[in-house]
Length: 298
Image 1 (spheres, rainbow, N blue to C red):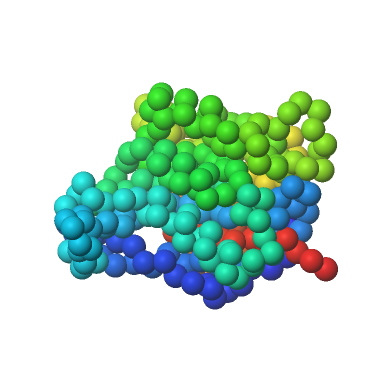
Image 2 (image 1 turned 135 degrees about the vertical axis):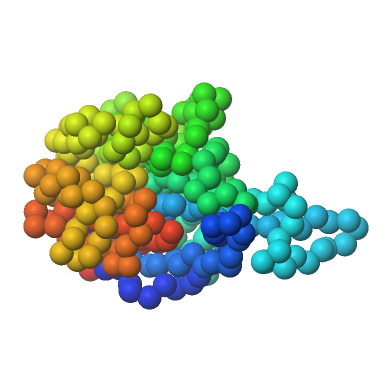
């Protein structure tokens, strides 16, 4: 798989509220970019990639009539919805308008973590499951990992792991995703599968949620790369200092030492979303962004 083009300007922006220091909220916009990708399997016509959807959408109450809501004052906390819950329906509509030839059921979604937000607390941690379910309802299948702010409890993890067309990688893994209809049957034609590796969380103290010691994290990256996946999902981004891109330099070293692949990540914001390493590996940082990657046609 290879990213053949990634447009610098977004095709659209989606309005939401972002928590800011002091317990307040501010208006923000999530940019939606289009790009093209080669090497997609036969059953996948496009990919949607997103990470760090840490925002909310106020939903007004209805008391016999539609109630308008000021985006800066919002509504009572119980009426807030997660950005990632409301976003999929909008993206599906955008896809149907811009690329009517694409069947949403043949579109896969890649989530790189940190899908929760709460009014009044910046960097809040909580349950991301509603976001997964919303994307699955709108598109063919969903694959992804947890970020350091995603607290998926046992019941939520079971719901994702047992859900048809959902590939939740709560431990380092390589999965095969393809045509909708649940888990890919044993012996399925490999050309119909997208081989996705996933490693959630970040490097840090293991007594905190979704964190691994540096040694174990880097070993997991190496093991996943040796299986030569089509793409690798990480929450934590590598550091590319020569481009002014923040992240963990040791992850960059591990990626350059492995075989060429495409890495989707988040956690740290990059103004430049696409970088190619010396070994040909492409890194796409989706922090607070969403990408629609359609099939490249030569």
